[in-house]
Image (cartoon, rainbow, N blue to C red):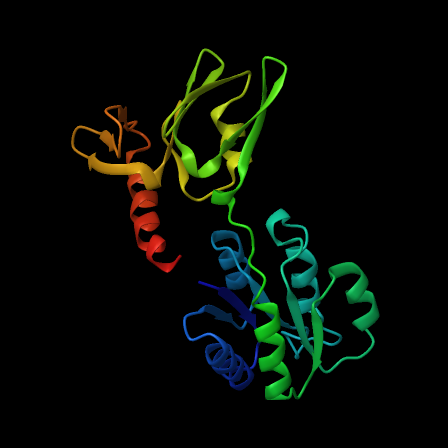
Length: 248
């Protein structure tokens, strides 16, 4: 299922773009925004496969090019280094600069031609932004490189400065790495801390006993403990994860 982000300040143009995307792919999940703040939040939470961005988002500001800055910031995020960005603009001057710095998929001049936009969206939607779940964690063990598929990690526990990684069918240890650093490297919304020294993959949770603060896992007899201080934040993340998984 493709996820498309539209950043366009004018409602009529925004609605037209939504309609065009739905014509190309009725099942696409569309996030449409007038301003950057909401768009940035969606970018970080989701895995966007195509961006449609208007350069001028604040026409009341002389010389505004906030959409261009948004596109440049998107390129600084690792998973969006090659995701197609289609720029909608009535400006000519920024084109050459933005092709070099942002590697835009295409510029479409406004007022835009619906068929040209439709064809561009159809072409660009063939690309799929890599999902963090499909990547591997790479580390050194006994002088060799080891790779663990992120999807297969069930939980991770820290004991005496050593991370113990439990996957669906194996166990690994990584010395001298903290849970905080590991969470940053995973960079995947499926993972969260349930107590100070434990990271759990929310996708593998079978049941939660919130009263006694126990986590029961799919395909495993292991039981994890939820820290009393982290209970509320953990339950909030679990609820949100279960809501979002139906959008994937």
